[in-house]
Image 1 (tube, rainbow, N blue to C red):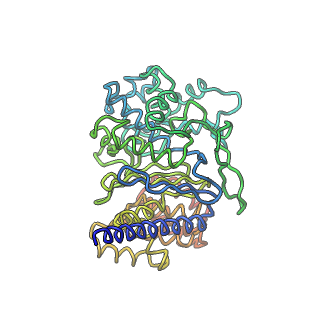
Image 2 (image 1 turned 60 degrees about the horizontal axis):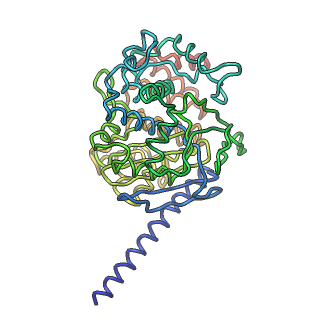
Image 3 (image 1 turned 90 degrees about the vertical axis):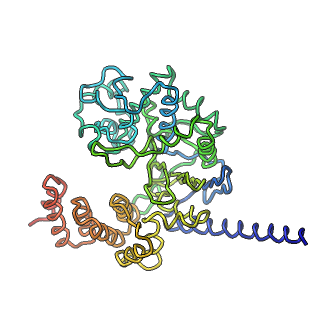
Length: 462
């Protein structure tokens, strides 16, 4: 009897695992179809082991993908390793570690670099605007000299600005304190320890075994994408990997192989702060997803690669694609929900997206009220809604749906100049000139310094 019962439980468990995997595959195939993604890798880590690793479309499990800004998560770990060794203090100014910085840069801290609140000028403005490589006839020394001559965009700690200069400087800090190229540091202190087999640095100019071409749609035609990452800024964006390698790296990180203490790992994943004490959107190389329950930290890259870690749920999901504009970060929480059902509901944007897919985006405000009644803590963030709506409008080709999300954002944040600026743009895209003008004017009332609103009103006419 006991043997029969054990066999019955085993069969039941196997059936559940099969059903779960089938559901995950259906979701992935739906997203690939709607987003027109040629190839995708998915790896799921649960309770310290890989429970699913599968490839779809034009790729296999051995295919290597560029991971773009997901590289920053590795840079965050490299900095925290130096913190553990007593070589770096996050609150210390970068000028303690690097000489010859402009006076306006002297007080910027290591943590402000990690969390993109440094106010520094962006190095991308000095690179080729199409490839982001070095302009012809220039070198790193010339770029560095020009960068230091540019004015800062804001005082340190005042404003968030996603900025590649921050991680360029962090790379310099790593090299200064280790006496080695950062590529060698990453390889010795992360890749080898985690047992990564297909991870390294490179761009479209390099010959990389098993590297997938990446694509983008231009006038509805799928064309190959091309990108250059000059070696000196590859701490910001310049690594290639597989979903399984990234999963192994996440497991090594969580199991104390890369950072020695739990406090160091918690610091890695703790948001920085602005000067007013409010939390930033970034931790040390990772984005934070502030939620009352089922907290997440994430890395995203190039609108085509992402991985989420759910520390309280002992779960991680890695999705790599070969399409610019795939935005896998939009559906990772929903994927995670098949392993921990509460996760999908805990993220307000994911919960809204699931409901609106079924009921229609015109019901956005009604659905918000219904979800709020079920959970008093349900509150989508202004930036999250804004980012989602812009992706719908610009990359997703869904301007009407985007408008409904922008309208929800206005409803939730009526005192924000930015939400009126955004909804005005959506009205203009949807051909409603009158409401575009009205909302740009409202944005200007709330923020008279909004130069974009002034420019758009001139274009729209009196």
